[in-house]
Image (cartoon, rainbow, N blue to C red; front, side, top):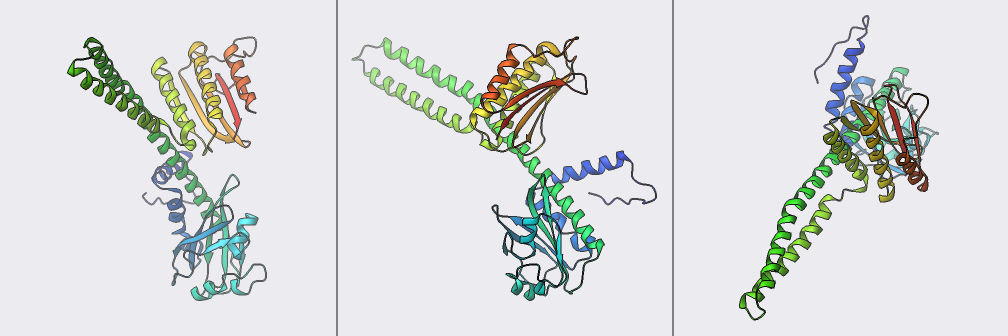
Amino acid sequence: MKNVAVNKRNPPSAGFLFELTEGYSQVLALLDQSLAMRRIADDVPELSGVDVAWVGEPEGDDQIVLGHCVNTRTPAVNGLVVPAGCGLGGQVMIRRRPLWVSDYRHSDTITHHFNAQAETEGLGAMIAVPVSHEGRLLGVLYGANRETAPFGGRTAEALQQAASRAAAAAVVAERARHAAEVAVHEERRRLALELHDTVGAMLFSIGAGIRTLVDELPAEDARHARLSDLEEQALQATAALRGSLDMLSAPPEQVALGVTLRGDCRAFQERTGIIARLITVTGVPGLSSARIKALADATREALLNVEKHARARSVVVSVFTLSGGVCVTIADDGVGFPRGGRSSGGLGLSTMSERLERLGGRAHFGRNEDGGVTVQAWVPA
């Protein structure tokens, strides 16, 4: 990304900021979550004025592993495992706020499990800030000086800004990776269906043709046994193909919902000509097959109502986590509810609500800002 000079007297326009953010997101979409945070850490010494920097990345729920050290002189810090509560970073894991000490090896506010490593590297003052998003700890960003002196306000502010950028980078990269996984598994499912319709149909025809020939031959004919063998081989090939297609078309739990909804959006758009987009707003946890089916059925029912009644030009299906569960919204830009009050959408939407409620979920219907209708379906994770 090219460098952009910003005139402090003339703040950048909204359009300029949008273009800058869009470009930044496009770059980050090429990265994985870990690499995204490490790219931010590279700039920490220059931006904040600290001598060295590194990143602590979560390993499980109760520890981080230090790595990607910038400007260090020894390997003492790299690969260090920091349990929750230990040292400075371990305190940040628990308290989820920036902490710093002016003399790491002699501070009375932290444990001293890692004094030997700090002495080997020659570290004095140290600061650590959490990299978090929506209450989820994505990592800990560190800065340290070789002198023992308090940090200035500028340093702490710069580290927090870097942590915010690192969190945004990690989230964008995580969502990009999730979208790529959904696309890959959707393509695998499409190929499986295509193979089923072509190769599977051919094998069925071959088997049926052989069976017809076998039935037409007398049992004592020498060709009878040979054709029976070929029929058995065709049956075995069909069974092997079916097993392979099942494996090819079954996506992992983490992307199963996205794969299903993307396929439904594509089928709806091809059938109706109405633009249908799927947006994954947040990462989605794995769901049971029953919950995935309930959300998918709710989406199909809502899309069917758009097709029948909305006279819409477009519809957006959004997926995100909400209140300890997963929510799918289907929003159209159509004519909305009938004049005189809100419609329940008939038996289909009522049945959808009942199915969701049986799983502890719920459905909601309402008018949106575009004048159309938004259907929201939620299930607990």
